[in-house]
Length: 209
Image 1: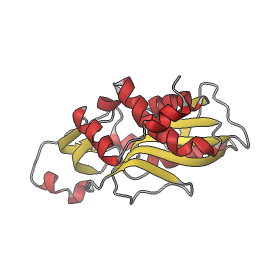
Image 2: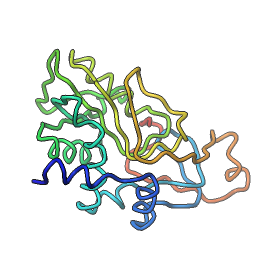
Image 3: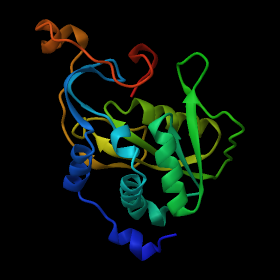
């Protein structure tokens, strides 16, 4: 286990986060459907970064550095990338990690598999890429539904350029970048007839980010 001083020394700049994504082949260009259903000429494939434990450890250490004094009891993340981040941030903070899954109706996120949160429990919500803030908001709502308190939210990348927001809790991103996105009806690449890709494993109609 690294010492607290060692984790502080692992602080990372936004430029270094960008370099990690580019070096991992995670910054893609083309014509993509995002998890929000919007279209974009650029896509951040976080699993190309998260497949490397040491790179994930470094990114999570930068989150830990920002929240260490918040007396976090539990770290929560949405499926799927949020599971990895919650586990690693929890490991470094020496607290437990839980994750929120889609409900059976697909309209919300809930805690299953016996995860129990209680009133007064202080929770940090973490996620990978934020476009609209949907997945973070859904996880915050799932935590609040248990009576626990969300004290902060953290993401690796905010690709909205700071336009996305969360439900009334302090939040931060390790890298904030403005990447354009469009509704299908106004997408210039659709108008040009460019082939489209839908990364990820969940159909866009069933998810929100």
